[in-house]
Image (tube, rainbow, N blue to C red; front, side, top):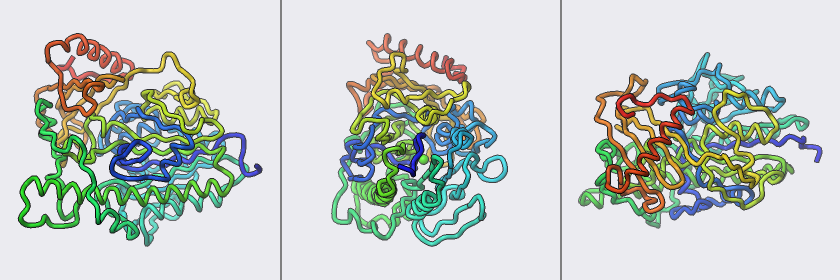
Length: 472
Ligand code: CA
């Protein structure tokens, strides 16, 4: 195979706000994703991949830098990446990889914030647009283009593969805008699902009783969707409140699934290209999303909270030369581990000050005795302009989750007051996987609460984060 080198290639596909439970390989009840399933079938499905901060820019910064947000400084949507920081694409570039980035960046623009570590990049300014998007190109500046964003990003990626130097490995970063709000489908999928009702999630009518007061108050309910902007319609006359909530869900989730469907089609194009050019065996194909999303779960849309649907990232990795097809792992990994893992798979050293740890041995099916059984999470953007989501941090293990809503903006950009009293939530994920029964403070939970509190403090010490003074 003259077109491949010994070092593997990388195709890193990252979407935006695509929850694992909208992927059929993860058992979706609401859609089919045949091409994403090809990646799962041909490689490994990671069932416990979590983000350390469930929001766009911070998760992307953690992926690129291999560090938590208090270290890389991208704590909220209003903080931009300092592009003098180490990132794993730069390390690949320095190791001789051809590197390119197409699609969403969302970490700031201009000197100090533009993408670095890529031989070529063409990114959407800010969130970008679904239809006829403008791109910013590293060589051409502003590029105006007609078409649909998911198709255009894929076209750019395939063209860059056409132009690659076959004698050097490549690392291609394909960052889709989909499935971010405001979920605008392409014409081929406009009428998909028109004739069906999408099933409602089990917790759609969750009344949030017993959960933290700040959680009950978040503005991520179906009634918080803007009918015109988000749902592209006016609310029909004569509906009861419950009927209106149902109607809103159907409008929301159908558009969400339509933009996912076009992404799945385009990922199929990418996989076909690799097959047709004899690249599949020696290419690591990663599919992930910057975080999860509520798909009507608990009555919500959006992310931010440490609840499962938002915390979990889809993570599918295909690498025929290195990973057994059809593997599944339930080991806990986080977004800070992604960079070190890919470097490890490519035989590139990881600097000591990177916080993430390579999970390449887990991908190979090896048992790692000291692999962590817990992860640390922190959401900083207290009471942001739109979602009123509280600042919180917490720990998740294989069986439990403890969340401290410390409820203080702490002068973080984009966060706002007022600070609220501290509240806690405790979930038993084995008995209560849907997280509807907050056990915090209940008799009989003293031992597990003490254990999780100690683990939370240990993790904060380990990653160098500062506990909220009044919470410790
Ligand atoms: Ca996102």
